[in-house]
Image 1: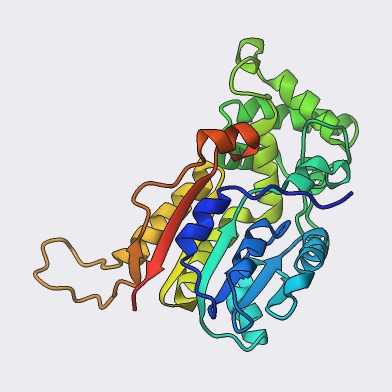
Image 2: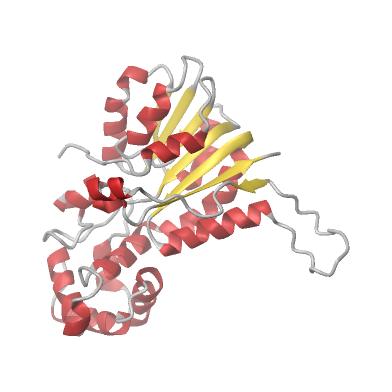
Length: 312
């Protein structure tokens, strides 16, 4: 299946990156290279783009789609949480801009074999990097009931997490839960009929939660923001697109902390903690997709773009 992914907030991201023709930029989640291609179009032969993705299909697709810019593009397989090490391997210590698009790609959602979606019946998987051992199958079939409740409640913000965890454990006691269809049916049966008619597909929040657990998305995000900002040259920008409240909260709080890191008591006349601001939050409120984009690409509806600029 060809790797397809429609870039979200494309125009807004390119505007916010403040791309210089001879600058060095990073797309830490290159996906289908939609954002990356627009960056490359604005680079001269002396500019450079480093593209990174955990998904081998994304890496292969990005290399193919950016072949005409091969003089200025390097595509690596890896995680944005390892960005300092990956860039050091390319001889790069500082960059002028970093983009992180944290959404699941359309390719991952639409490829049944990847096991990300509740809309088709497929083997449970959900791994962005298929080299790793932990998959949705292991989470669903080996986590204890309390641990399943924690994952579904915390990462899915699912009010019926207790019912869902209990029914999963009861079902797998009879036989392993092997497919997305089996899991979706269990989730549906766990939610009262009147509530199933609200807020979209009843399995949406639980599938999100399991995907986040499998891929360590929130832990990786918390670990990645500060190093990304530290990699920026003065005037460089970190642009992050999130798709749910948990991600957005982490980005918002991390940006605020890097802008105002002082931890001294408010009644201290001067700062004694020694923590200095690294820059400022460009977006006091997140940038949202236009109504036109949401109509053209319904998956963009929950997207939020936040931007931080380094000033030291």
